[in-house]
Length: 387
Image (cartoon, rainbow, N blue to C red; front, side, top):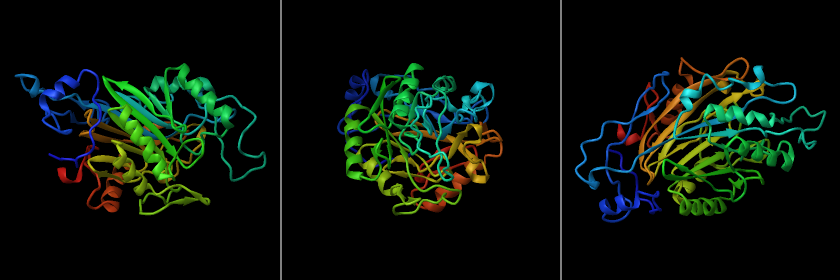
C-alpha cells in the first residue's frame, strides 16, 4: 500500500469527527476501510469509481471515511461569438463526454468569458497575433448539463472582454448554479458528500491569484486548508505549443511572459496544504507525478475548442478527463485518465485510440523517472511505488 509522507492535520468534514476520534490515536493517520476500486465504466474507459463490498462491520473502528471522486479537464471553449458558434446553438456540445466526466465534483478550465460584447475586447481590429474569445452567457447551461460544478477563470483569456466581461461570466455561471474560482484571494469551498473541498485558481495575470509569487500563493493555499478538508489547485502554467509537452525544472516563458516554474510552484502548493494540482495552459498534455502522496497533473491539454477556436492539429487536439478519488484527509484512493480529442468542429469526443493516455503515460515516466504516476492501458493511475 502506498503510504504518503505525513502532512499537517486539517479539520474533518461534519459528521466524521466522532468516527475519527474513535480510531485515531494521534496525527492524521489513515483510519482504514476498503477504498474504491477504479475500473473502466460501461461507457468504455470512463474510469467510473466502483466501491468494493465492505467487510461486515463490527464497530466504528472497522469502517473509514468515504472517498469522494473529483474529475477535471483542461481548456474549454464552447464557441467564439458572434460568428464561430457550434451547431444547434451548442446543445449537445458535451454529449460524447458527459459519461466520462461524472464524479462527485466536476471541474473545468473555462478559457473564455461568457458575456455579451462589452466593447472592451483586448484585440485591436487589425491585430494578427491576438486571440480573444467569448460565448453567449446562456452557454453556461451547456456546462451545467454536462455535469460541471466548478469553472476556473484564472487563465490568460479571463479578461478578454475586460472586467465587465469577467463579472458577466461569474453572473452567468451563478445563474445556472455553477461555482467559479480564480479571482485574487478567492477560495471556493463546496460541500461534496459532506466533505468540504476548497478550489483555488492561479495564473500569471493580475485578475487571478499569482502563479509567479510563490510566497503569496502559499499563503492562499494555507488559508484554504483551514477552510476545507481537501484543497484543489487549478493552475494555468507553462509555455504554449505543440512542442511544450515536456516538464523541465525552471521558469517557462511564452511571448516574453513569465508563465511560472511548474515544478517549483506545484511542490510548494502541496507543501502548503494542497491535495491535488490540476494544470492547464500549454494546449498539450503533459506528464503526471506524485509528490508527498499528492498527484500533480501538469497539463490536461485542450478539451474543447468549439467553432475551431483552438487548433486540433496533432497533439494539440488531444485532451482527457482526469478522475481521482481522495479520502477527506487527502489520502489517495484511486484515479484514472480517459482520452478525448477535439473533432473537426472542436467538440470534445471520446478517443477510442487512447492517444492521450499513451502520451501521458510515456511523459510521466520520461520526465519523472522516480516520482512519475504509472498509468496502465485502461487508464488507471497508480503512485510509482504501488507497482
